[in-house]
Length: 264
Image 1 (cartoon, rainbow, N blue to C red):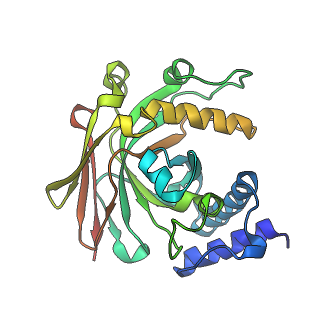
Image 2 (cartoon, rainbow, N blue to C red):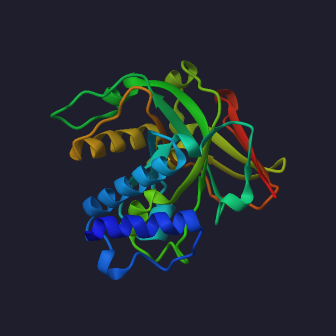
């Protein structure tokens, strides 16, 4: 068994057993982002097989500059969304299914068409027409590391970018196209109170820039965004460590809202 497989099995075991770990063992720690993504692929394959689910898109991490600084990384990285951990607005999730419940308010999109192979880098003008719709989203980040700020970016990538679950609201196909998403406000509500505010500019200066980053990132790895892929682009405001029995909602104004709760 090579170290990529050993690292993946270690992380999957920690996830399924809800164990707190210090880090990936030194002898199995991914030596580069490329190796970390290979570990991630094995982790995701194991999780989808275990849950009888499928991969449905991507999550972006560290598109918010304060989060980059917190984790000591120089730029974004990605993980995969899976059908078993993706839910519709209004869902109630069991709080005990998560070690941590770090809630993020996110601009999300569903791709309207498969991206072509391209010899030139993607830009907003090339990406935007291929988006099918905007979706208001909540991500629940759930990590096993005792201190996730100290494990290094490769460990975070390997553990599927510490993705726990996401909740998606109703899609909006037209109005978002003529709006300045960088200036669009977001309100994170907990038990009816607004506790955090943000805007699209907190996501790489615009959520569309995050999609451009992902399209180019995938191209470098010989992959691409496909029609129907859902992409959540990273937190647009400060995160919230949710408690059992919290009711969470994110208000995107005229672009809609998304809600969920944690059962005690």
